[in-house]
Image 1: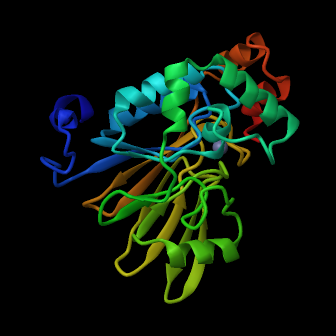
Image 2 (image 1 turned 90 degrees about the vertical axis):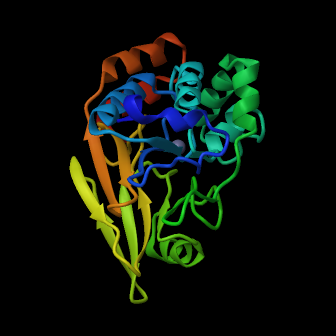
Length: 268
Ligand code: ZN
């Protein structure tokens, strides 16, 4: 779909010429894993999408920060927010709160990135950002870009604060959907999801994490991404195999900490 109908992406005002059946490709927590990103892009191309939304943490941990930034630039995302690793790896923030492995990877990324890519990452906007009438995006939560949304209390707060029916978030690398319906918060866990679909009901609010492209942590090593169909009010969640061995070898060859390679095989 993208290759045949992306004529409007050259327009400065991206709302002009927007097709009625907009489908967004959702990418979160790519973490410099080019093999996982390319697998997702190939798969998404086959499913069809029009535009791309990126939920932050493009870099950090993986061995291909520059190539991943180039890929994302080529996608010309309609909306993108920064993640905590983007801030640290671009020199915008100190790695406070990072463990030794994350700190080492952030330092390596800072030294590896081209100056142009570093500046571009440092200039990424903080979330949340409203995309259209249905969708908004953030990295951690709609009330704070660095908060990890794990429990019902934080999810409840996020659902109150979000200003669109469907708020997409990342940061935890854990595919999950919190649902606010009749003042109750429900949870849809999608750890087994290879082809799960979430229908967006009228009058209901959703906080949805599609999972991580480049470093899944739900015990499933496969790359995760989603496609939002705006007209159909539907989110399709995808998991897929990718070339983990190559991503691991690049991490080792780059001199990045070895646990970063190991964890890719187990999705932790
Ligand atoms: Zn992340």
